[in-house]
Every structure is written in structure tokens, then in C-alpha cells.
Image (cartoon, rainbow, N blue to C red; front, side, top):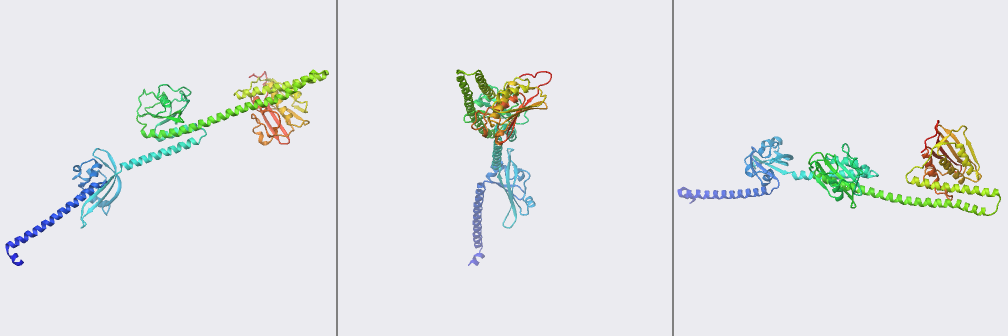
Length: 560
């Protein structure tokens, strides 16, 4: 029957229409399927955060996604149909054939390049591209995927800046910590800050928030710094407001009449940050440049961190200074107390002797006995006078003044005879003076005071019957006077500090004295242009040598 229908014309037509309907149905299904795939493809393209550009084999743009339009600041209509080089710029494989020339697989992994947006801005991107083929292997186009690296570069730049800031802070910390006084490190800190910012750095230190104590600059900056030092802060200036108001002033562009507060400095761009610690103003950190706009926000953030580190170091240094001053004041008070106690104790003995002699004078006695008492009283009065002189000399030295001396030609033989007459009653004293000894240029009273102190110590630290030797020899343009005893000697550990005030060696325990005699003797000899030294061996005695200049020929020495 089918064969009959085929033979019948109407049957053939019906069969043909049925086949056509089947074909149309299949085509519609294919169309719907393609529409579905294209819709899905469009959704995928739109959802991609990376920029995607599809091109024909010859390099004409066929399709782009929304991310590509956003990245390049162009509309889809402005890109579709254009050459790839017109869209992405030179340096990009513009066709599938060029892709094959660069890579046999027709695929290039991500590399960094720069594209030009429609507004003229250059954008760093990471670009990948590959050839597209159909199931039969035929080349039908290419795909280009780009990723905006602007944010990554910005983050990388911020990371590098942060690393640079922390490296700078570490170096500043090392510089400040490497000096006993951090102020000695401030020029190097200014230099390092200048290198990091490309601007000039300076620190203005103040005391009591009112007076400029110091101005510290980096190297090779020829601006006046001595003029404002030790002067009050200039009123009405930005510098004074920053220090007194403890606030930051940032002026990227300065006019010539800007009241900076430091005249003569070539500043057209500047920032000032206060140096504050424990609510106390220590000064200000200044960053400036001759170029307007040179001091930027990044430089301001760096100098704020440096200022905080410097402020802490300066505050700690001033705290240490305060503690040292407090300790020095305490030691000075204790020293005064020790001097008063020592002198009071030393004065009791001669006063007691004088008091006993006065009582003895009340009784009748022979003229010889009275003369002996008068002589003993005179010696004790001289001893009291020596103690008073010692106290006055100490007070003058503590006030930072040199002892007053009157230099004149002095006969040492006569001076030594007087000293021996005073101290040779209980000890045998051997005197050996070089023949033809010249006159000395000295204050005879002060030099006798020194010899009396040395003889007193020799008597004090020697057995009663042991001898004491005094020698005088010429040594070039000076005369050396030595006092030698054969007592217990001085321990080696005491020799280095023997001439310091209040120093009493281990062998002086249990003896009278405030520990000022040798300290004052050294100061007296230095004031006369001479010196005093000692050599000693434990158990063998000591030798103190006084060196005094010879008097000039042809006239008396000039007095002081």
C-alpha cells in the first residue's frame, strides 16, 4: 500500500511534507539548543570577573564580556568588529596565526603587560590567550583573558612602603640605642629620614616648652642654625604653635610669607610633627623641601612614626639625666655632711688640747713651762687654721672655681725649714736639698700648706720612731720635692683614686680626717702650674713628689 502511495502523486507530497515537518522540528530543536547554549555562554561570560575577548581567526573582535568593557572603559559596540590591536594595543598577538608563531600549541600563559584605556590611562594587566578549535580541529578563533593588576600593584606598593617604614624605624631605633645620649644620634636620624623621603629633615629641641635648646640638621644643608638656639620660641609662628599646641601642621605648598618660625630656610613644602612624651613637649620634627608639593602624605606618616620613636628616646634620656642630677644632689648633700662631720671631728682634738692648756695656765708654773704651753697652743691654733683653710678650699672647688694663688719667687729651703720645725718634734726628719737650688715660682703659703699635709700624713701613718725624709732636686725647668716615709704603705687598689675627694684608703681606717687633704693638695699644685704624684709599696712606705716650676730669671713671676 505504501508502494501505492508512493506511486500516487498526492501520497508523495504528503510524505515530503511529513519529512519537511520533521526537519523543521529538528532545526527548531537545534535552534533552541543553540540559544540555550549561547544564553548559558553569555551568562558565563558575564559572570567572569576577568576580562574575556573572543576574536575571529584574523583578529577581529567577535564578542566581549562586561568585565572587558569595565576594564577598557569602552562599550561593547566600540570593540566588536575592531582589530584586537585597536582594543588591547601593540605587543599582543593580534591573530590566531601569530599565536601559533609564538607557541606551537597556540597557547600563551599569563604574562604582564600594559593596555591603554579609552580615557588614556595605562592599566597593568595579566594576559593569557589561546586558539579555539572545533571538534574536527579546525581553527575557529581565539580567546584572550586579562586580569586587572592595578589593585595588586597598589597593594604591593603599600607593602613595600610599609616594609620601608619598618626598616627605617628599625634603623632609627638602632641609631638612638647605639648612643649613650640619643641626641648624639639625631643628625644620623635626620640623614636617614631625608634619604627615605627625599626631603630635608631637621629637629628643633626645646626646654620647658619655651626656649630653643638645639637645632639638629641632616648633612649638607647650608642653612643657619645657631641664631635661634638659646632664644625663646618666636611668638605667632607655626613652630611655636606646633610645640605649644602639640599638633601636626602639614603644608604641601608654602607661600613665601608662611610664618614657619625659622628664617632663612628654603621651605616651599613642609610638615611639622611635635616631639611629645608624657604630656611634655620636647620639640618638633620638621620635614621640608625647596620644591612645592614634595612633602607628601606618605612622608608625613613616616615622620610621625620617627617622631614617636625619637620622643621616647629623648624622654628616657631626660629621665636618666634627672635621676643622675638627683643622685648627684644627694651625693653632694652627703658630701657636705661628711665634710662638716669630718672637720667637726678634726677640730675637737686641737680645741680639747687648747682647752687643757688654758686650764694649765691658771696654775702657777715656771716660765719655761708656760712657754711650752704657749708653743703647744700656737701649734693647735695653726692646725685649726689649716682645717679652716681646707674647708674654704673645698667649698671653692665644689663651686667650680680654682684655688686663689699668688705666684712669686719662693725660697724652698726656708719653706722646708718652717715645715720641719712644725712637724719634726715627734719624728726625725732628714732633709736633703740639692746645692744651688733655684727659687721656685710658687705661692709660699699654699705650697707650705701642701708640704704640711704630706708631712702630717707621713707622721700619721708611720711608727713614732721611724724617720721621714725630705729631698729637693732640680728637674729641668722644675723642682721636685719628695716626702718619703717608711710606714705601712698604700694598697695598689687605692693608688688610682688617692687624690679624689673623700677617698680614704684601706690603711686609713681608724685615723682622723675627712679625706680632703690630698684632693685639695692636688688642686693647689695644679693652680700653681705644678703637680703631685705618689709611689708606694705595702709594708715599705710611700713617697709623695711635688713638682713646682722654677722662678723665671730676671724678675718675679706674675701673680694670679
